Image (cartoon, rainbow, N blue to C red; front, side, top):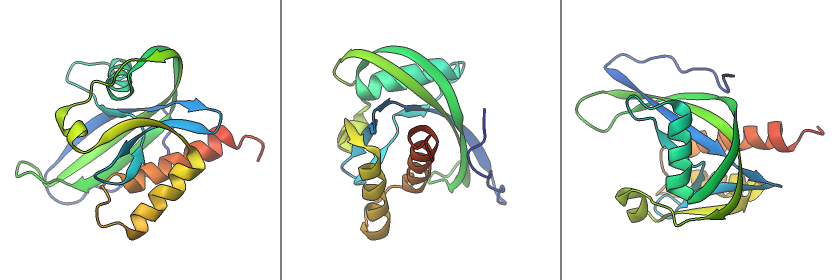
Length: 171
């Protein structure tokens, strides 16, 4: 898996690793993303890999749960993004998030997403959005919003990387 960013150095204190899988689904210059009302941002579909679950299984499960996609025809590795954040619970000081990103092709119709309670409470919904609009929106949210989420910098980085490597092949 290609490393997309420079891995962060590990800080002093207790740390645990959370492995995640993220899906990149493109249709022209539109991208299937999740818009979250609470944070006013766009994110790639995906989430945590459960214990004893293969990364590919987690990717497909998360994509189906969050977007309702019925049929995934192909997935290929795009790259890995690593970050370290302060942890909000008492059991650890930091979380090391390792996000493996995959380009996925889908076909067919969508079912209703089967999101988790907190995702519904946060106003999360799948949307097709122009990648440039999503990047601009997230940058504006980062600069101006009090309610921005912790993942917005990662999402801006990944969307720009996707834009450059997958959509700007003529450059």
